[in-house]
Image 1 (cartoon, rainbow, N blue to C red):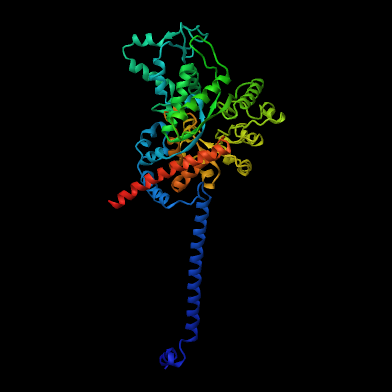
Image 2 (image 1 turned 135 degrees about the horizontal axis):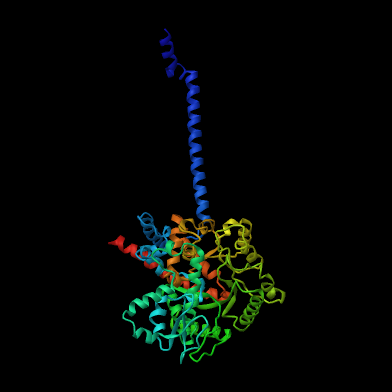
Length: 526
């Protein structure tokens, strides 16, 4: 009877489902609806977070054209393949990774890409060192000596130059080579002395003191070659050519304007050196339409005393007044963590403001992996002194207040990936602090610092390391485009010059995109 009663109650003609079952059914419906709504809410939240992160990234605000979208798919397909290859170059020391980078499809795309401007490059490292060995050291009247510390020194002179205190005697290179059985081996030894490149960097440079000692010795050695007037002109011209061939349209050089000399020993003033930079750049631009030119950031070394830096600040003001279109401003260079701080030079650096004169600063600051020292403290001084850009800024992410204020002022960071790695600030470039800056959209530019010292050239190697390593998998064509645009936006060019530069760059960018996207279209059609 009980079963019949239940059966009769279940029959829809007798009143539908029983009360208990109705309640359970309702609860299940409510639960399912809540679950679906919750799932949709979570999915929507996830999408919103991903969208926010994408738009926050450097270049995330850019909208790609249809051709750029196609080009981006090509680029990212190559990137995906290389990221999953057994050897990932950004995780390796550049000296070991270079040959892998040169085989990379992404690298060859980046070489063709118009990169805009190189804004952080030093004057005696803009051209491959093998040019100095194969060209300059074979010129007549080139002498060399070995100092008591084992460093090479060069001088052009006729007759033999006076013997310096640090050397025993000068040797004419032409005559020396004639007496050698293996000239090639000698030339290779010269090249090793002109770069930091080595097969085992960790063993060769066990610490930064050893590394920086070699770094400074190289500058000492090659300065006698590059500062010879006929070589100086050729060096600047060839250096511009090397960057131009790498699709760089404009350079800003940190230059100490060391005395340039003639064969008879006469030397020229800093004004003459700036004029020569200007004339050579003008000649190069005439011969290479589309190349925008170059400017000088006059620099001095941060180990000097305050009185000498004061003189340099006055010289910078004088040069900028005389060559407003050529001299962009002033900087202090050299090893930051053993040099004097910007605070130490504050009285000298405040002279322009106290005189009502405008001298833009482009300070190296925070090139250190330490926190709470006078070195990362340079970031604060650079902010207070209204530096136009920050050179390296490796320690910036450890100083959120400074980071925030620099961002409010629109002061970008000049990131030099290979330099930071070779100079032992970071080993795996995926861990570079600029990854945080890039992910948050902080204004930055990519540059190459001293490419010739590292066995590199132009900007493409550093762009590769930044794109593949620092940017991670999310960096795409938008990132590259923004970096190129930034290099012009944050340059020392005047507004009218920037507008012309942007137009030139945009024309070349469109051609680059069309070629990259066109290659994919041809494959699809085939």
